Length: 457
Image (cartoon, rainbow, N blue to C red; front, side, top):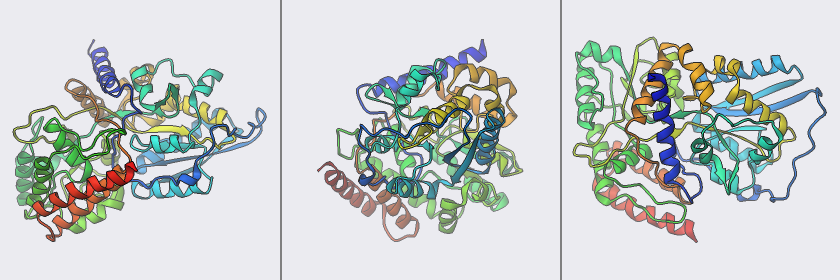
């Protein structure tokens, strides 16, 4: 009954955010730095047909691209190798990188009409690639019997639908969180609250720094502002039909003030640490190499990769909340999607690979929920008792979020990527001591709306 209840909670909360987005394009919540948009010149006419598929058993090489840490690379390659064992005429050319370089590379490939056959997508950017005609219609593959989504709840499928058809399939469910070094907290004689406040995070940082010299930080950039806004019942910006900044001036000022307070503390991550972490990946992040005690990833699924990169015992807790908060900020979200390039000559086979990823026990044995809780209810039930302790922590965390989660923010409007970049630049200036929170707030409120106004023209 416990296992059934956990699954019901997860799916119920996902249904909640899907319902909140009804009538809109799929909601988008960025999980990292702003991505480079695919050039408009790459748009493919709706009538364009993919090249004919090869004959059965004719040798096929599929290109598959994804971003992620070393553990994700290893588990994904193992899953692809398992598919090849079952289908020896089908082999793969993996193309993977970390988040920081992924979207620039993908945009370049799109501009040169050279996208891989299977593309890992993020929730924030699937609309861009769909509107440019770069993603194949997966509903066609479902109708052909190459992709089975019978055990995937409609609420999950809805996140990748456009005009009723499926173009991107969610490949895991997760939630924002704080990941922390349990050993460092134990040594310092402090404990992580089940639901910490920003002040409690700062107090823990001070205690850990005094004990071991490990530094800490509080959330920054879009995710940090987004969660502070949600604490107050706000969103950062409106949906695709509302090209305005929605976060209040008071919320933006609170965010920048928190950044300054943290930066001026002796326990804080240094600027060099922040800059290094942008491209270091989980394996080289300040927390996993022992220079810091905490991490705020885009999703809870990253606990597995972080734990794989360090010998320290890691814990996971709910995202910090603002003192005096008035609304529940936590939500569930798709971790990533798989899509098929509209120009791929192997769309039928690519769909079979995604089906294998989604529905096959052999695939789950290799993947072990690294991207999040499986979207197939059958595969989630199959995998749960086989999980290692770190994956058990992830499943338990998703269950705790499901019990309190509220709906997603509306879809990102055009210009949101540029606004996120502006926020990142202003955050850096405050950390460098080159701007006050008040000046950063005034500039952000003005320039963000100017960006949205230009994007709406």
